[in-house]
Image (spheres, helix red, strand yellow):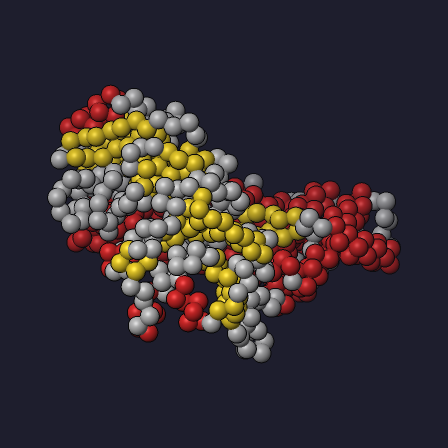
Length: 224
Length: 408
């Protein structure tokens, strides 16, 4: 238990400033989108604004598209780059815990941090836009944003997978594969059209969540 | 490797196969495809013939020339060809002063030109918000005006929503609900079809499929609700509303057969083979033509003003699948995964030809040789699975297995 606390504290020390920036970035962008929506709604009038939004399927929230990816990069890189460049992870792997447990404490910590950075903001945003927009619009809006959020989680897991891979040639190949996988999450789709892709994206995110087990294997064996 | 890591590796290999099946065929086509000449086919209201143009452009030498001929093979010059299609080349012919005075005894004037309609019919409707403005259908104005409310039809029935306050208008909702119920409508609506825009000269309201699959016509006349049950013996898959004209809408059934819903509420099956269900339509006061392009052919159906078949012609499509590059592709890839444009439907297309099997076998032997060279036991279940994946997924499986190596 004490080791767990120490490990989490170590992760917190590495990521706290980056997580704070990510949290502010997430909230800032979402609040900005809401303020812009409110301003346009009030100046154009509700009927005209909603009618235009529905006719042209305006993505008033498009500014948010790459924010989850940015947050994943901030947290993922701040967490794993020092471990790899300084090979500090070797020290952690000497702790009296199973090596896979240590790796997964790090990964789950990052996942929870990412979740806490993004999801409360999204909940606040949903509550705020629901004041002005009916559920028929709010739900498709959230469905359209879902791939971006899943893309954030998937990107984080892929960063962990790549970082734990000891051989540079494989790291490079995994970066290429990850790039192609992530493009699926950030495709330009009209509002409501992403629903059919969500099960596939959830499956890929789930798979990327367990992928570090594979690359961390040689780390566990100390085959650096 | 632990068992868990080995199993996870297999999933990663399959993910790699998916990514490669999306990337490699696309890369191949982008780099080797020589765009084939484009064939266009139209129906001439003048000669009652099918007019065909064929583009022999070469993207490599930047040379191109177009030939024009009709269904009998008779050659035309570009000007002669344009003159046969006055509804298509109206502006060009007007500039050259070659517009006909009359067509089929009718004066070729603005009135006649205004009857031209063109568009596309797709069997799958795009996403629409289930929230629409109900326009006043008999406002007496040039264009419908945007109302102050929007309606939806959920399990509680029709609800009118004030967008300013995001609150329901109970009085109007009650009045329309009464009319819908009297017409036999059962909430909620499965789908609502209409043109929720003011950019139309006449409002025809909305066509709504209720919970049982019955079709209803809803509109507002002088502020009062109007709802009519439309009897039908087809199962509606999707609709495309048209306004204004002799039609309310095109209807697709679940077999992608096309029907028209006329303004007298009669439904007529069009004498058209559904094919892939995608049609480019073009209509004027004489004929309505529907063009369907698939992998093998371009089919053009010409219907008269009453939607009876007037003429039909099909030409062979000179598309990518018949080119030598595509033939080579059949030897390389056992499948490709495509994403439908605009939509996020991931569709795996399996290669119907088994030509890829030779490459798959060759790669399987190479992989077995690599494994033997690395002192791996071929009868190990995970090594056998690697060989199986290469045997099935060919080049994708081979690359994926090597990208995610089965470490000792």
